[in-house]
Length: 443
Image (cartoon, rainbow, N blue to C red; front, side, top):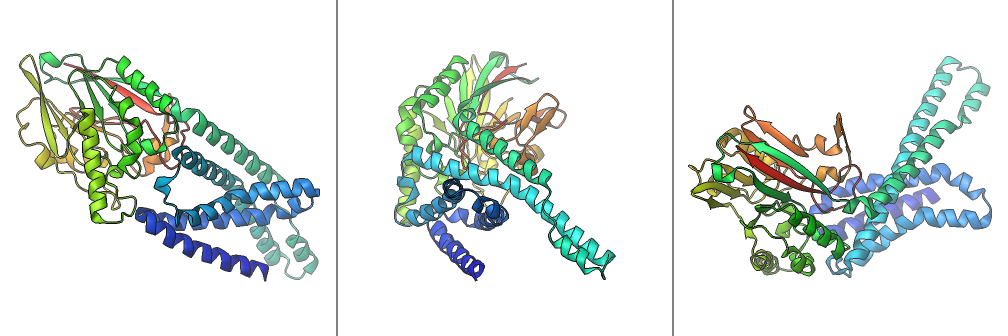
């Protein structure tokens, strides 16, 4: 009877959560089935270990019960709280760390769940095997029902969960601000002499709504300036939800210096599509605030347009497109046909495109005269392995080009996917560090 009550309450919680979350963040509705499975696995893990916990002495027992269920209780209260107090009005640090801790706990719980599921499947096969091999011996069948989970699998699962918890916590508190400078020298046969050894610094995906420290952003800006860039490229996702997230960082970002300009494009998060607005005018005002933000900083925001940079009579074209993503949930505002007008005869063309899938689907096939495309968006999944000989991340199952330098058409056309400087979702990084990239163009 209790399990039925729990099930009914769980279903009611999911229905309530669906209506509250979709009312605030319409783009998040598709993730609810994943969270439903995650919470169901949470209950599965509890019913797998509760007998051992309940056998402990009273103080330790209640401490462990509270620790286990606190994240779920927080999720319930947070969802209900969002209905009355919009997430965008929360304290940024509280929001980032609170959601980060909840994320870390649930991911850490998944590790023992996987091993317990595997153990239960083995147990089930043993019962089936004994049932069919000795159907007449009831005593054996009864014994099979008492087969316990493999102690080895249990230990591996919980040790793995502990390692995941400590790694994810370190990734949130330390590695998320462990900025890494990557240098790439790209040789272009048609590069005009005046642009030989031209220095470009790219950074991407700031997601300022997730930053808890101005000091860390100051550090990143100083690192960018220390590279002595001729130009700086920012390839989108300035914010998470609203332009307001960027206001407190304006003076810091204004300190980025480049003698020939700072150029930027919009990312999928910059359009305000990840939350519901009170009116169309409110959303429009948010975009106007964003355009003015770039104007106030004297960054050249390229919206399906270009800028011709001239040095000593030589020219290169800097092209910027609005966001275009291959997946259905991303905007398709990018218009390279419009953006390239006026630079068709410029010998070197550099393109800023937030989503790298635009290069794969359009640029590398129909615009082979674009020499280098600078993208971001993937974050390298903020998780992976990058050591000599091994480069892996879950991002590679979503994007063919997910981090680093790629080329096509006999190495005459390049794409660089920046791993991003900020974070979203999980406010941390493991293995895939936040990146600032220096490019040196050589003839």
